[in-house]
Image (cartoon, rainbow, N blue to C red; front, side, top):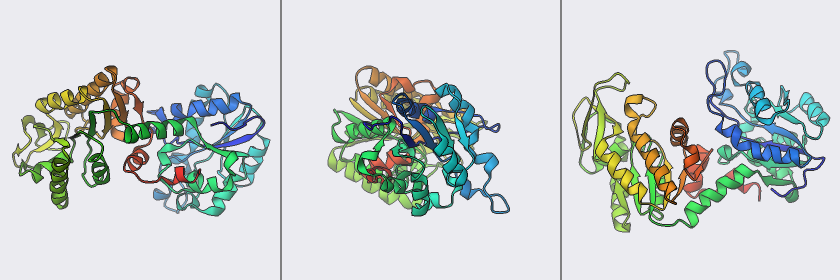
Length: 399
């Protein structure tokens, strides 16, 4: 990020799409903390910062009269938290572009921070409206993209806006640089053995990633709901577990491909099963290939935890994307916890570990283990697409 910031107004696209509780208090500020080094560096270098971000999907949840639900989705909810984190009084603009936005941006002095209203209140944001992008660009001298979480979207404030700044007037922020560097380390120069832990509900969400991993990993550990589609592909009885019937053939093909390439696929030998999808359900531990009717697998069992952990601890490069079970429910969180502990143990022994994907990130944060892995990505969908080998619009636009 070697631009000259002195006496310049700098538009920084951040990803402040943070979770809020019923009282609009932030429940996890990882994304805000991750953007602070970039903001502080610009201020220290004599610049003024104009922050832009989205929050939620306001256009999908409009009021009955078709207006935007400002009360729920306003970025004003974040101002007091930002004040504390930056130790200064952040100014807030009630619009993203327009007369008030232009006036406030013009009046901004060196060392000051202005937070603009939710970019997604503008209809043209998600459609990549060039007029909106141009209007945004007129607010500042320089543009910094530090929003890795939205790099896979061709939105006005993330990709289209970059076209309005010359090459020497735009750059990635520190967070963006770190995300790209760590993902490339995993993709381009991994030390073996390489183990990928892939979880989550559906195989369909992870097809491209699994295909890519076939050329990269020595071991692929599959957990979560998606494991049961693979069990069925191996002829197992899965009861009422989540199975994508239309993806069983695909799972069979992926298993065959792995065998051909010498990639070892690990499925959970045993599962914690329940008679309903509920925290209060009856639960038992059974072999994953023999789950009875009316019961469903909601977590990996102790045998699977032990086997998976051994593989992880003996790895030199680890990617973890997706939980092992319904970790939001306490009775079905042990598998994900065991994996998190194994990943941190491997890291302490010198392995490089990258945790990406909303739920696995939430798991390491909940357990207070984020500092004990090599890198925790802030971008769920963006990191997934980057690892799949796709060119992300937010990155492409900068070059």
